[in-house]
Amino acid sequence: MISVDQIRPSQSVASEMSVVHEYAWPKPAQRLSSTFFKLVYRWSHSNAFRHNERLWHGVSIERDSRGFLKRMSIEGHDLLVENPDDLLASQTGDCHLIATGPSVNDIDYGALDLHNVMGVNGAIALQDKHPVRFEYYCIVDAGFVRKRPDLVARVVQQKLTLFVTPLVLWYIAQYFPLSQFRCRVYLIEDIQYPACKRALLKHELLSTHASTDLVLFDEEPTLGFSFNISRGIFDGRTVAYTGLQVLTSLGFNTIFMHGLDLLNAAQTPRFYETKETMQPSALDGDFNSFIEPSFRHAAPLLSRRGVRVVNLSAQSALGSDIIEKDDWHSLAHVSLEQE
Image (spheres, rainbow, N blue to C red):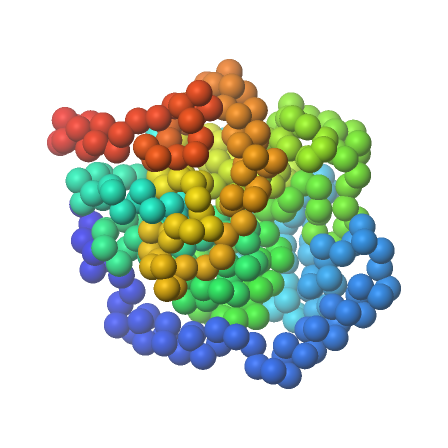
């Protein structure tokens, strides 16, 4: 078992992180320039290209012969992007996705010996209390980067693989010098809104991405599941759903979901927040239209493909009729038996 000291940043890294805080928000001149180019883009492009308004100026996106994301540079600086084909379907066995619901605080991570762990958004804060090592991380919400740059700084300074969209990576790069990135970056994108390209109409999704790797549940709203993140991911309006697609694409066949509460999120702080410090959440408004149906359709699909998904949140808004539920103590018991 690794110690908390092994996980927490060293004194030198901690010192760098205090410097990073100075970069948390771009300087006024930089913000004004970004806003200007964003408005120019809006004036000169139709709504079908609106999702690229931050990516057109000073950003270069390179794709391979199949049209998959390959490389990205900002203001002439190449980012440490790694999108190797051999990473997909390279893993087997169990993995853990740690979301940020308050039920995470009910788990004694000191009693667990976790491997193959993915964090999403603010899950990195768990390292303040427990020696959890994240091999993978996923951030697809630019708002999270703007609101909690302190947590993002901790993510990019660890040796892990960060799955991130070009837009989110652009935001991160605005706040932190590229030299402070220690993580590897794997670029992913919303299948309906490809980076630097026109948004796909709903009826174009299947014709453009004809493949057994993608399953479209519904066209209005656009719901689906991707078994190959190189082709894109479906936005289930929660980063945990994106993380589930990533881990499935990597090849894991048992996925334990931590902190997947999704219950009264507008009034309930995340596990690392208090009532006074909690950030707004749109989960409640998106639950019935996007989140619940996405997981409901994905669950039997995953089961048929031999992937077991287990929800460790007893109070989750997703019932056991959608995803199997279990208690975290069952993992501790298995861990102790193995020892």
